[in-house]
Length: 361
Ligand SMILES: [Fe+2]
Ligand SMILES: [Fe+2]
Image (cartoon, rainbow, N blue to C red; front, side, top):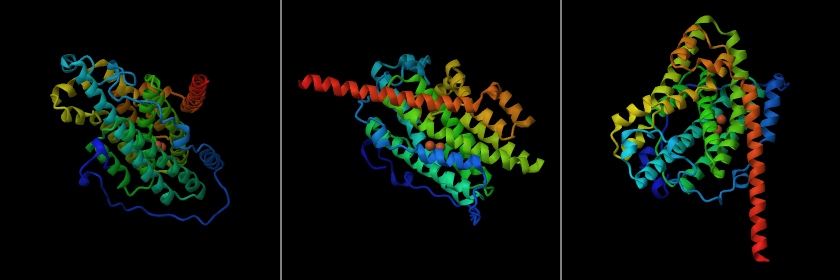
């Protein structure tokens, strides 16, 4: 991290943590799990190049309501927001955009590291094959978000303390399945819901495309987590399941209660307590935070971790209604939306070319 306002002190750009993973080889080369090989084939076929698929020439003003209208900003409707001038609101918008996308960026690097870990630790070769395609997917996502933050947003935030805590919980745990549970079901589930909200609420073509294309890959990642864990968790003892359920509840509480973006209030010198109070209680933000669990709840249920303790936690959090969500249908829709965005993009590029040609003539 070294360019422009993106610059961070060196001590914030390097981070390491020790883990005790058991690396597993598989010398049995006969294909075994058809579903995983199908996912692997899809993973290979659906790779895309961010340099080609995304039109980076689209102008983007990170302070403009065009990509993030006022009513989507966390402080909208609060006395703090009411007192802001137009310029202050635009600066605040810039920081919210920078913070959110910086967290996506750091999260994508977390996903990259976790996917590599799955390659090492998952026992079956076909699962290693699939996970290897995910490593490449996540590297491409890091590429996309780092380019977006550097070239278009021009402002970055370091990884937040709760996100670091979440990554540590996932990566430092000696149980191999926790990487998949924590990253592919919980963190990626949350990210997918956030990308969907971004994709469906913005009218900016660059933002919409980035969210839609990344989501197309993430749907495969969540599917992989579900397939692998569903089989594994059928074999575990009641006690082992209870431990995983506890992990789910703790991680969900952390994601709901602590990912509040207070770093933005601190950096802008806003009254942090008042701002947090608003973010916690405003109906819009409550709805937003609830929506972030729309993909986690059905996935947790699908892998067999929705025992009484988890159900009670989901009920208390007001998110239990998402157990009715059909994830396969939702992912199929994500795929369709990405293709529509791509078609609309191609039409826009063709129209621009036509206009230029007409002008030249
Ligand atoms: Fe990703
Ligand atoms: Fe992913």
